[in-house]
Image 1: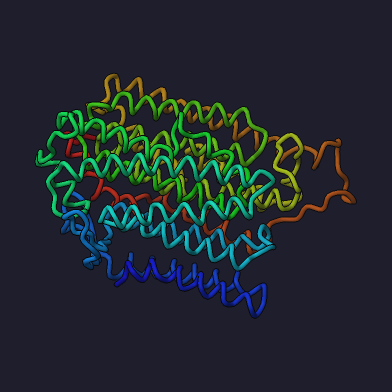
Image 2: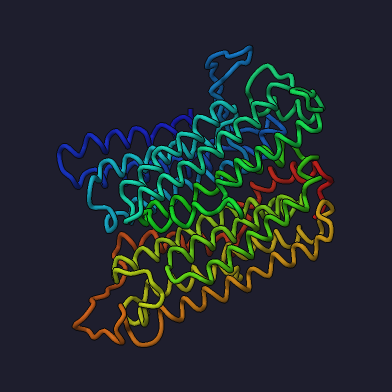
Length: 520
C-alpha cells in the first residue's frame, strides 16, 4: 500500500493541476507544490515509521520492505507481477526523488510562465515514474517505469526549453530510447536462458548465481553471460552517462529549463547507476569482476575527461553538466572495485551528487534569472549584489570539490579507501589514484568560475562596468532561497553525519561486495 501511494500521489496531483488550470492560471503551481510536498512527507513517513528494511532485496527477498505483489498477466509461460519493494539502496533514492522534485517545483515560478498546467503535470508524472523505477522488483514493471520516464522528460525539454530545445529533446529521446532497447535485449536473453518461471528480478538473480544459465543462440553460457553484461552496461551507461555515451547530456542541460535540469542531474542520471548496481554488479558479479579493469578505466576517463571538458566551458550550465559526467565516473570506479567501502561509497555518491548538482543548477538558475546570462566572461562582482546566492554558490562548489563537512567528502573518501584495496582491479592504487586526480581539476575550474562571477567590479554583459542605473540584480527570492538552503542543509548534514544514509546503504551494498570477496 505504501509504495503504491508513493507512486499514485504525484499522478493524482498531476491530474488535479490540469483541472485547476480552468479556474486560474496560477493554481497549477500551487496544486503541484502541494502534491510534491505531500509526496515528500509520505516518503519521510515511510522511511521513519513503516519501513524497516535492510539488506539487498535481490540477494535476499526477505530483506525487501513493504513488498506489494499483485499478479498481472502471463506471457510466454512467464508470470508477470506488479512487484515493488524497498531496501537499503532504493529507499534513499526515493527520498532524493521526492525532495528534488519539490525543490524544482518551488523554484519553477521564475522559469515557467507559459502552459504551466502542462509543465507541472509532466513533472509530477515524471516523479511517479522515477519512484517506480527505484521500487520495482519485477523486470517488466521496472521496464514500464523506465520507459515512462522518457516521455515527460522529452516534452519538458522540447516544449519549455531554450532555442535549440527540439534538437536537445530529440537527441535525449533517441539516445536513451535506443539504449533502453539494447538493455531490454540483454535482460530478455538472460530470462530466456536462466530457467525461471516469472519475471521477478529476485528469481533471475538467484538463477544466475546458481549457474542455471544455459547456452543458446549458438553461444556458450559464458559467452551469453558476457554478451548480456555488455548490452546491459551500454544501455545503462548512456543514462549515467559515462564517456563516450555522454554527448546528449550537455545539450539537454543547456536547453532544459532550470527546474528540469535539477531533476535531470539530481535524479534521472541515478537511474543509470542504480540499474548498473542492480543488474550488472548484483546479478552478474563474476563477469563484472573479470571486466573490472576496463570498467574502472571507463570510470577514470569519465572523471578526467568530464573535468577537462568543464574547464573549457564558459556557460555555467555546461560547466555543471560536464561536472556531472566527472562525478558519475566515481560511481563506476567504486562499483568496479567491489569492496565494502567502494560499493557503499558509490551508492552514497549517487545521493550526494544528486543533492549537490541540484543545488548548483538552482544557483545557476537564479543567476540567469537575475542577469539574463550564464556566460562566465560576462559576469563579475555578483557577491556584492546577491550575497546569499554568492554564499550558496561557494558552498555548493566546495561540496563538489569534496571538502570536509559536505556530503561529497565521505562519498569520494569511501570510494578512494575501498578502491585502492580492490582485488578485482589490477594496479588498483594507480588506477584509483589517477581518478582521484579529477578532484584537483574540479577545484581548478570551479574556483576560476567563482572568482570570475562573484568577485571583482560588478559587471553584466560585454561592457566594462554596469552602474547602479544599469542592470538591476537582486538576491534570491524566498521561492529560490528556501530550496537552496534546505538542499545545502541536507548536504552539510550528510557531510557531518553520513550514517544518516550510509548505514542503510551499507546493509545492501555489503551483500554485493561479499559476492567477490568483500574487503575494505
